[in-house]
Image (tube, rainbow, N blue to C red; front, side, top):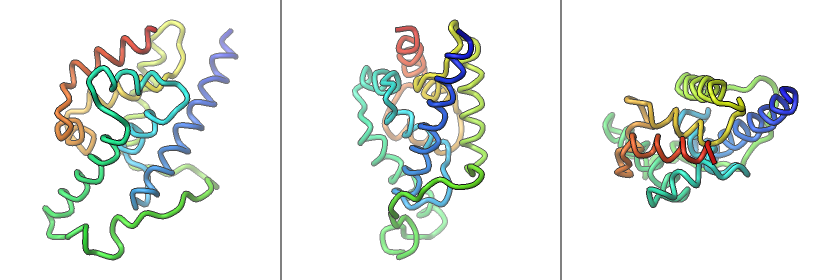
Length: 167
């Protein structure tokens, strides 16, 4: 039974990382960050992440738009107009994954936290909602600003995501 769970986790991780890289590329970012991993969790076949956000009335498209707004605000804070700069935020078509997977430290931290959360559950199996729980625990960074922008109560999100994992 442990082998089946491990194989399911490998498939989930591959889908999650591929989706995160594609989301980052589509939003014009070089490497996936925690926000892209969070968004990727909402696109997986496992609908536990979408289900958790749906209980709060939030959609995947709203998350995607909010990421763009958070990025634009951050760039504006350092004097860069993301709307007029020809290089920043330019969406590119997804590129095939080759070589080592590269992501930001925030994405790595979020993923590791999601893995620890999944390991503590019985049965231990990584679900998309584990990524949502880990994101809801973030107090700083882009994901925290994203949740704040969407007016999402982090405690309610954690509760909804835990319920989605249990179902």
